[in-house]
Amino acid sequence: MRRRNKTGGKKGKTQRPKTLKRYNAPKTARRRNFSAAGPQEQISALTRELKEALEQQTATSEVLKVISSSPAQLEPVFQAILANAVRICEAKFGIMFLYENSEFQPVALLNASKDLAEFFWRRGPFKAPPGTPLDRLLKTKSVIYTADETAEPTPGASARLGGARSLVGVPMVKQNKLIGAIVIYRQEVRPFTDKQIELVANFAKQAVIAIENTRLLSELRESLQQQIATADVLKVISTSSGTLDPVFDTMLAKATELCDASYGAMWLRDGDAFRTAAFHGDLQQDFIAKWSREIIYRPGSDVPLARAIETGRPDQVHDMRESPSYIAGDPLPVSAVEVAGIRTLIVVPMLKEGTPI
Image: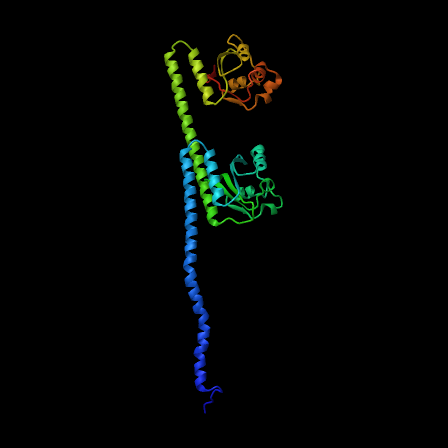
């Protein structure tokens, strides 16, 4: 015998659809809300992405334009890279470093505080202290990120003098060798997006290309200058038969210019002594008079001139004031420093069949 529901069979059957209807109503409403709001959200997201892509393309275009218009100058390239990187990253300031001889050297700063700029320019090349962002970047040759520089055990100068909080550092690498870094700073704690970091990484690659192009151009220019100088000397030799003074003057002038030096002097060997054959540059008359052609000079063994003759190889002195011959009081180094103001010096021997002349 079938038992009836207390409410009656008919009523029981009509309750189920109502229950389903009440359960399904919110889902239908949610679908309507999503379908209404979804396109607007998608349009906003696409608009933001389009704007970001346009900004990045514009920034990249600006950097490439500066690189193409400044093939022999790196400073405007570095400044353009920093300006666009800081702007795209919505940061406060940026610093670019070059890395050479195990030391970092700041080569460009943008929007850094006066105290921070003075600190870096006055500091000069430096080794990255252990644990600092530059030290981590050097060891990993990869992007480094610091959420809050002020929370580090030893906050760096960027935090103490520039108010830096969040920062990102991107290495400049050539053939797995670190040649520099771009560091972008914010004055609030806020992470950088992947797209922002990727753009700075692209700028770092462009900086490497610019540096390499400048180096190659510089080498090409030097080679051309050397060829022109050699041609000028050969021309003078061919047109000055039997006369050595114009040959010596031209040769010395070209050598001084190619070395980007201030002065030049040519000495001829006379037995165990020397006498001058030519001078070039705005040398003091007292120095020229002291070492005129009539003066016979016998250098001590520590004098760069004597060392070059002894070894048959170029001899360079970084600072004549610290050279043993100057300290010992040899007359030529003393007058070179105290009369002519000479500091860095290179002596190149003239050899005939291996014999210095």
